Image (cartoon, rainbow, N blue to C red):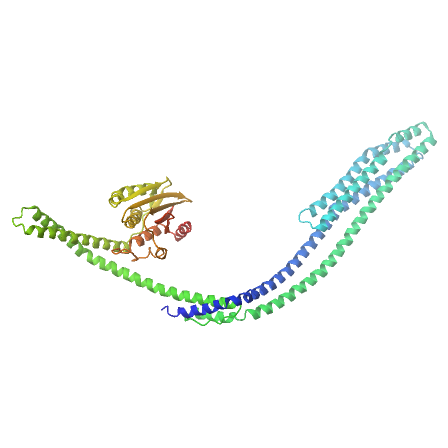
Length: 559
C-alpha cells in the first residue's frame, strides 16, 4: 500500500536537486511581490502620515489662535482702551469743572492698572502654555522650532508689558504734585506736571499699540502659513493617491501572472479531497509555487503513509483482541494443570520422603521432582503472560483519589527491596515532600514495579537503582535510574510499543502497559540516557489528574 511513495520521493528529490540554483529565483519572486506590497504600503503610509501631520499642524495652529493669540489680543486691546481713556482724563484734568471727581477716577484707575497688566502677562504665558500642549508630544523638528519661536515671542510680550507697567507706574509723586497744584490753584505748575505725565502715558499707549500690532502680525503670519500648508497638503495627497493607485494596479497585474500556476495546485487539492492519493509528477517551477506544489505532494504522500499505518494499527488491534480471546481460553486449562501439578508435587515429595525399599527408585523420584518443578515454573510463566495480555485488553479506567507520591514510592521500594537484594542490586530513594496527587494507587504501583523489574533485569551482574521524586510547576516527576548498559538510541523510540522486546523470553507488554497507565493519568513517560551510563525512565504526573488530553500535552511539554 505504500509502494507509490518512492515516486513522490523522487519528485521531491528532483525539486530538491533544483533547489540550489533555483533558491535565488524563488526568493526574487517573493521579494518582488513583497517589494510591490511594501511600495504600496509605503505610499499609503506616506499619504496617511502626511495627512495626519497636516491635520495635527492645522489643529495646533487653530488651538494656538483660539487659546493663545486671540485672548492675548483681546487683553491688550482692553488695556490699550483703558490707557486711552486714562490719557484723555489726565489731559483734561486742568480744564475739568470738578477736578476732585477726576482725581478720584484717576486714583482708582492707577490702583487697578497693575491688575490689568498682570492679566495681559497671564495671557502671554497662556499663549506659550497652549503651544506646549499642542506641540509637546510627538512634535517634529519644524514644530519644535515653531514652539520655540512662540515661547520666545510670549516672553518678549511679557517683558515689554512689564516695562510699560514700570514706565507708567514710575514717579507716583508727580500725580500727588499735580493734585496739590490743582488744589492750591497753581495752574501753571499743574499744566506743566500734567504735560509730563501725559507724555509718559502716551508713550505707554504707543508701546501697547506696537505690542498689539506684533500680535496681529503673528496671527496673520500663522493664518497665511496654515493656508499655504493646506494647499501643499492637497497637492501632495493628490499625487500620493495617484501613485498608490498606479503601484497597486501594476502590482495586481504582476501578482496575477506570478500566481497563475496556483490553478494546477488547486485542481490537485480538489482531486485529493475526492480521495485521489495517487502520486503525481510535480511540474517544478523556480518559484514559491513550485515549492508549494512539491510540499503538497509530500503531504499527500504523508497522508497515504498515515493511512497505511492506520491499517497496520487496526491489524494490531485485531491481533490484540484475538490474543486476549486465546489467553482467556487457555487460562482455565492452565489453572487445572497448575492444580494437578501441585498435587503431583505433593505425591512426589511424600514418596521421596518415605523410606524407599528399592534404592534404584530414589534417583528416579528425584529426577521426577525436578521435572515437576520445571513444568510448574513454565506453567507459572504462561499464567503471568496470560495475565499480562488480559491486563492490556481489559485494563479499567483509573480511579483517581488524592495520594502522596513520595509515600507510595517509599512503600513500593520497601516491598521490592528483598527481590533486588537477592539479585545483587542496591536501591536508593531520593524523595521530597510535596502535595497530594490525584492517581490510582494500584495502577501506578504496577507501572513503577514494571520499571523497577526492568531495571533489575538490565543489570544481571548487579548494580544500583535510584528512585527520585520531585515536585515543580504543579506536577510530580518520578525518575527511575539504573547503572546498566543502557538502551541503544535506535531502539529508544520503540521500547514502549506493544510486543516489542529485546529479551529472549519477554512479552513486550511491560513498558507498553506502563505507558498506558501513565497516559491514563494524564502524564507522560520518557526514556533517556544517563551521563554516567545507564538509563533513566522519567514519569511526569499533573497534580490534578488528567482525564483531558490537554493535560497529557502539558506533561509531554514538561519532558
